[in-house]
Image 1 (cartoon, each protein chain N blue to C red):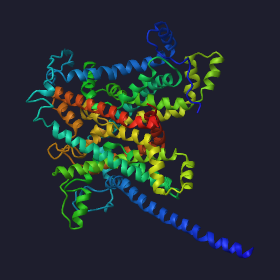
Image 2 (cartoon, each protein chain N blue to C red; image 1 turned 90 degrees about the vertical axis):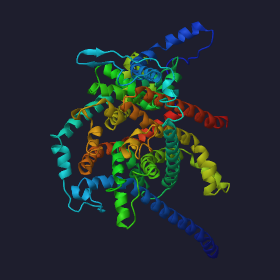
Image 3 (tube, rainbow over the protein chains, first blue to last red; image 1 turned 180 degrees about the vertical axis):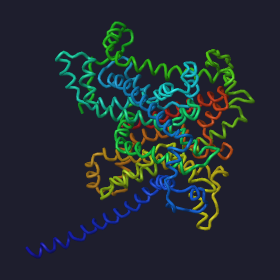
Image 4 (spheres, rainbow over the protein chains, first blue to last red; image 1 turned 60 degrees about the vertical axis):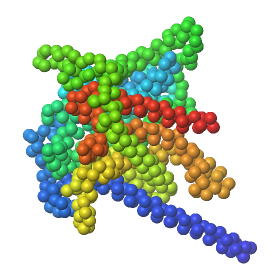
Length: 298
Length: 328
């Protein structure tokens, strides 16, 4: 008995430790690869943050300085307050208004349409869903000039409502697909019960479906907000005059063809990025679910 | 999964059965009520501009005759005229004429898209495979690797343009401090192309990591158990189980990536701005530059060509790669 046990242990032991050894080297390899990849992913961001604390002499130097030698907050005070009478706050206001407008419009128009796609069968459903998908793939350049022209005829060029309308072209179809995904995950029984109790279809939508999908709605609101917050090309084309810029176009004036104020640019970029990046990391899992399920189903 | 319930009966349109079709339409009326606001606003914001953009490509429209604007309170009417296919095939100014810069830009665009999508896919799949292993700390790596996606692309593109700056940029400063010579990032077309591709690879890999990882995690583990009972190695598992089952996700991700990369304005415009001499421009930035110069007709012609290319590509891609999978 004892000898057979010993035999069994000696038999098993080497194979276990072989698997352990394999796991050890596998883990080590994974850590090496991922550490390197994370370094590449993070370094440019670190570089911008580090530059935001560097005085101009270190920034324009052709010497290599990783960390600021004489750290300063002058880039922040220049970007926020000194640059053209604190115009940063005007850009910020414009960006907030445009993004909030886009988010509201996106959610309003998307939730009703997404509800129809999720809960009803109707003539033209498939074509409708497909067209909302295809719209997102348009070469945007094709719409640039016509949108500019249409807004010009409505005297909306260089206004915040005009820019909101322009952003709706991409925000609404995107939100419809995401929102449909959220409605699809809500069990239909509650709505059925409400209808049996005599609630109409619009009442069911408003009182049952919308409250149940509030988490989904908030994610869609955020993405809709973010497309506008981060958009560059349309804002560049539709908004003229320093005081009408949004943050993306405004920040670029620090480092356009005529200037290279990388310090203040880095300060502004750091401030603008941190809140949206954190929110994005939180909401990103919903985005991918929506994109791939949408793509696969469509 | 009991997710796909819907009100009303299934709707099928049978040819010749008008009465049935009519009752189906009546049954659909609540759905149409919910759809109406969105459809109306999309018609105004997308369909109308799209038709107008297509029309513009066949006119001599420019910043001088586009009109439809106000100077003070005076409305200026448009005066452009139909010009047939001149924007495309006119021997001197036509976008598709033999001497047109279009062809060089098209080549650059194809190189740009191919390099990006291949590198995105390879790196994204590789990192997802590593992240899919079970070991401590992988959730931290997963968050760290998402950061390039979380940063607004205009901010990273501008930041990278500084890193690649020939005189004060990080890379050349490092090379000089090691006693090496400068890399001509902004004066040599090949190096500039490498620079923009690096930027966009950096930006695009996180999307692949997430989608590939999602796909891998939805593959049932009993498949791997079954195959290892049959004596499959890890390598065989990857080729025979992981990749085939990942195919739908790969297809969707690469299709979206081709479409996005093809019209990625920010990275090109903000990193190199087309330098040197427009050699890193792609079709979408060229179209924008023509728009900027007021050459609206030619700009629209570029856009129409881009739209056709994307349409043809998408149709062939989905046809060629989806059918064998459905037949299985």
